[in-house]
Length: 328
Image 1 (cartoon, rainbow, N blue to C red):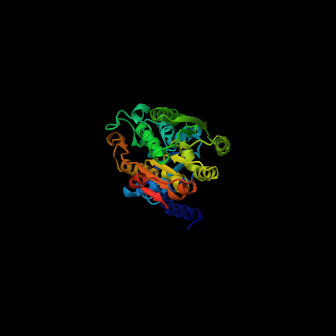
Image 2 (tube, rainbow, N blue to C red):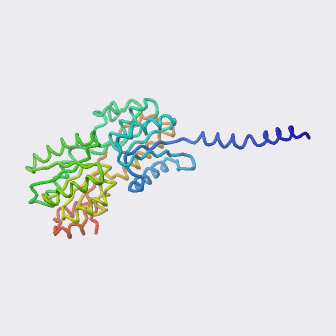
Image 3 (cartoon, rainbow, N blue to C red):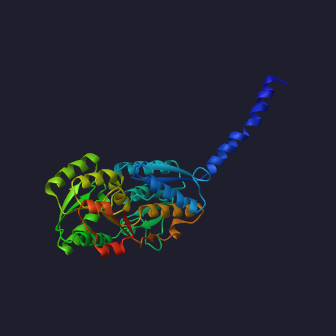
């Protein structure tokens, strides 16, 4: 056999293998996960998202790939990351990280399905036509309402009945959430006769600076916004609050598990799991328009008992009776 004929035969025999591998890789659907959280602190919610996918039969690395776009608190990077996911032609964009991520995905594509998780009314945000009939390429979870803010302030008052002045901490770089949430806080505080002082922090250094002021002014409590950045910085926040003997109220349990005093709100890991389930259902062929937006109806109260004792606080029996978890 001539050398040229041998090489041609060899190449012809080998060709189907890489072609088959490429075809198999191309056939695997890709989910783009867009969130302002950071990889390390967000590990447990990313696992919850993967569990949700697995509930519908999709296991990362086996029959689905996930492109992670975690911007580590940089909300300004979400639009470019959403555009990159569209450029890569992912099958679904999952954006469980709040309105800015969801709106970035919505602005980037009108065709690729989007599964969001937002803390504001998705109809008012322009993400869907209605909760029951989304009508476009987006659907997902709605997990926060103004009533929850009022409830959180009420629970804080139950624990600190003498509280009159509360510091409210928000992240100004997350403007969509911050502006809406501040209106709700102001209304709820007026109804309870509380004086509130607003503070901004969007970096770790700014958190340190704010706590320098709070250590001097010493408000009766600190009330934190429902903010991914504050979830990422939960260890820093718990340490500073403990050092300055300041009671804290958060929107998610992760901050209390890190040493914060109390939280009331939707379960963040459960939100990511639900977004994973919806993403899997869409991969199986269900259209976003046919999946109604799910609204959280269960909110959990979590209290850190050692933190309460360190602050010299006695948790009222009425709160212990309704708490979903008391960390000991």
